Image: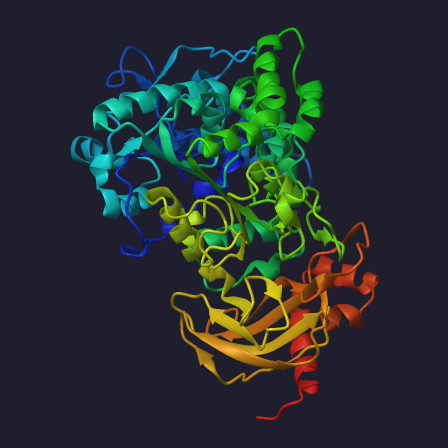
Length: 635
């Protein structure tokens, strides 16, 4: 981890450097675009300096770890006292020490209450010639100034580093300011490359900047393909939790985030369902208000506040007079640009541009905000879609808000209504995909590259290999289930077998049980059959599939692996689509499929086991035993 604030504001890149990915050359099919690619990176990716020149100036963004360690040792006694107090719930002492050090360390990054920079800072090189990846690789050591290097390496396999450019800006400023700089950079790239258009690859905060750019400047027609992955178009839930000191870390979600980032094939997340790190919440919620004078007036952080939390945050944290300019700029983003995002992006597509959004769903914000998200950015903010509250789903029979010409826009999990999205036909939703993990999931990686480098996919219906709704295939999920003969996430009368794939890269898997909620289906499992990485098995089942539609069916696949957490499971929710839709029952239902163990125990015992962190273990053991006690086949 190179930057402390990335931990707080954008966890997306924390673990990405831990994994060495194999080359995926040859996976993108179709004619490769002739246009150069501009990478619009995630938050805090720009080098900022104070002084007359980049070579002689003081670097003010990025930590000198030798200096940090020296400060830690200088105050080791105070930190020890603070940690002792923290163990009994008193975070004031240690947060005072940490805040004092952070405010000194990041003083040059401070913005005034009106959003202007307290110091005259400059960013690294801004001209296309200086930000060309081939030039940087040859002339600047250690990969400096190059963005999203893993993804860039794969893009380069198709178009060469000479056709890749790296955008940068003062990320503290608002999205509209950064969008203006992006427009200037695009003109510079067009001149340097000799091409009349560019392709944009945007990540996270870069997605917000790119969407804002397209909203304001898209009419100029300078872009061919724009791919926005896990974009913070409408904000980032983690910013609300941090700035309002409402952090309540979801340890299980955080561990799944780490597992996805490192592509860990051992599953630890179910071991920490009970909350055990409350002291971290106490510390961070005590710390954040004390560093607000240094970091709290960055315009970009205010653009990160989701619209439904914006007025509350302004009332709590900003003075109407001192911050009048900052409020004016952020109000324009929230109340003028965001409401027109769908209209402006649609205009760009009508004028011949390909704009695509890839978003993660199915996760809570790691800092506690109970909304569907990719762990950092709520799905609603990322895509404009309507979402059920985290942990809930729409009731059976749910009717989507907008008709969309008769196209179904409700996710198989019945948690997402994409009919209200900024781009209902150009947004892909991946359940279980975490923020910044697009490259670490085979499905999203190939989709992303195909959208960026070819013109073959114009919407979610262009290629059946890339359905609008998909469950993540990151190896940390171990298995992926689908019904043969059916579209992804659906169950029709054509369903004959349950197809389970081992999505691991290294580990063998044995399927030991399958449970079903919503239909009376019995599965014929062979627990001795070993699935090698990438291998699939077809599991027969018996039971009636009724002539109904718009009903949720929960499937849980239990498996064994040869590692230190040998037993695990994966939940997936499917939508029954085999006739007329059932009546809309209204309201919300529990999203996680109920297991035989859930049916056995009452709510009180369930709460006790969850508090002790034993619910998952008891449920797995009981369900597997129950499955085999009810098995209709003998091997």
